[in-house]
Length: 542
Image (tube, rainbow, N blue to C red; front, side):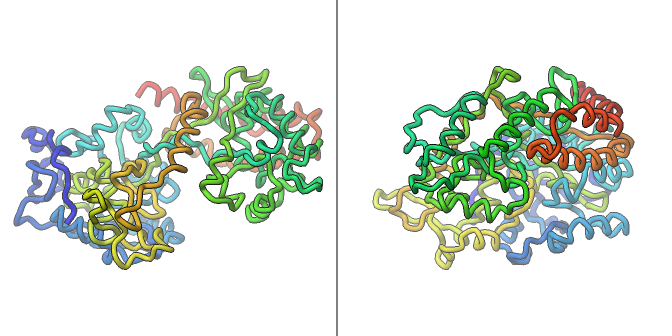
């Protein structure tokens, strides 16, 4: 049985808060234990909760050892409705429409439990308002996180002042990433004697030119591709940032909201990319190739600068070899004299919601709060002792975690997906780095090898953390505001996507820029921006 820390609930015991919580129990008479972390309900009490969540197909939830063990710890019985993840949005909508509701919606994410649904069903009382439960007495772990970072509450509070879903909160070393970074081919840098990475767009241009002309892969053929991507989807944000554009859409600077694709900064980005394309420094197949085709070029040692979550995903090299592929150094230009990059808000909404049929919202909130602690996060991700991992004694007499007997060491992630719901879903917990304490070894005398993870963390610290800025805060639009912008957003996205490709490849000359801007303006961009300015002002004042 997993042993839980005793300090996490040290704040429990405020009788007035407990009384207030009891009055919010929707008629439930179940008695909550406030004297310790577990069990959640008092001895002799009975409570069954139904959870609706996307099924990822690795195992039935009732068979997952982590959930079975957690039932024993909490005293709360669970039943599950887990349609396949591909069908989950449809099934969730049907549940709301029919009134055949679960007690808890778990792991939905904002694509399934959308912001509009939260506001709509929350205003009707179908989703329970959760803010009064986020207290030191009921949810000490989540409450502590919101005190450390007030933006968490701002980002999950709807325009009516209520919270209808809890988030996944990322606090690991790469959580600031907006998306996977760009990486340089370290072997090429070595072959060319490059000791300092480019720090400006001019320096990048010079290096890409050397990649093209100086045979850095050493095969005597002019087959080098200095820069590549798939439809610019991963590279765009890092290169736009060199021109002060953090996102191709709504951005806020000094509390003023704007639409970046009609800015002069974005035009400068397009001109730079068109120059790279014209001179063969940007892959001629950047529009149209698949990710597999991009990776094939990487494994053939043809790429100098490329985007991926880790470089070895593209190159096929080992983690050790990948530590010679430096992360992209953010750039400056005449348009942005200080380096800046887009940063993630580090949370995802829609991870946990409570419906009005739930017999005990307080117990449900106590149930999920443990996962917002470091210890609880590791528990939900790795399960209880004796299933996925177990303790063993190493040569020094220390107790260390090793893979449990029977775990397929060639498919450890598949094995993990069979024991816990925290697999491929937006789950309600804090995401932290795996430390030595929680590392799982093959043999007890092995040493924890986190060299690659430590290297990535250091690259992130050196190149991203101090200059990352969230382009636009994670906030809610009202139902009316969402209706105002929905159609325009789709039309804009389609048009901007098409025109960017045309401008970069030269199909549309940049001499037609004014015509492009006029077209965007005719699509109602002024009103579109005004909606987001209103929403931002409301968020700022919250």
